[in-house]
Image 1 (tube, helix red, strand yellow):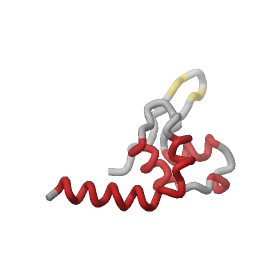
Image 2: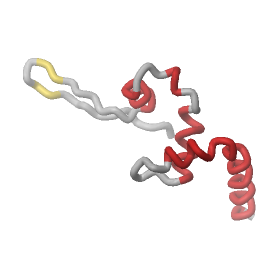
Image 3: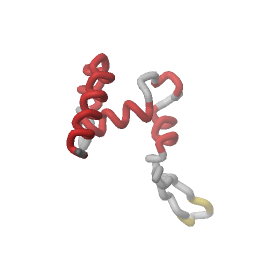
Length: 85
């Protein structure tokens, strides 16, 4: 039953992303990004990158850019944000 539900959802995702095939292939050229990850990235970030002034803004919005917090020669935590549960 679960395998059938997964296959059904995979089919619906494929239908909705068919027009974005060129973009999917481009995103899949990123090291470590396969088809499923590309689908998630496009679903979360969208296809209109004009809302982000730079790639750094996108990385910050996604919570994947580590901080660099230094003051007076002391380094503080530069952790990235926790992801959505």
